[in-house]
Length: 254
Image (cartoon, rainbow, N blue to C red):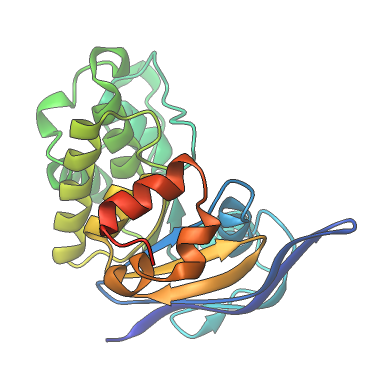
């Protein structure tokens, strides 16, 4: 598979605090890679570094091009799209208009739809997450899981090379999380490439091709879901409720 993203030796410091230390991670074309770790492990900091929101050392390339020195909006134009932990939808705009604003199309002044390719991209994005039926609805008319999918659709409307998902399952119940996983897997099978951050271990283990595990800003494990779920270092990192969930999922306390 063709390598899309390559992060090599990515490190971030906040004053005297080492938030990330020499993190390596790759995502290939048509691949869904999970990034997991306990609270404070550095997962969102890593995405912030990739997208240019924090300073870092090391190298980040997209399709072989070094992104050093590029501002967040320029990285987005290169094809890096992200979602945020908070949904941040405009509740006074329809679902379709939220995508129009978020994907950088012309203004929605007068609540008029823009025409041409941008409209087609938005309609395609809604189709991909199976929310075309909700285009004219207001966000507050949707369930929480559907609102999260609107955020995903808004990101993919720009047709990015890589979609970075930051905690998309936060606040979802089990059924909503399973539905989100099904939609994400379908997007990848349709040719999208993603990096998924989430605390829902069931979701990550079920949908990802590979998983990278962070603890205290360092990679402690990487591999297939089966390899990661049986790694003692990972189980130890998740001591507490998340660790118990991981052991329950694996059925193996090693």
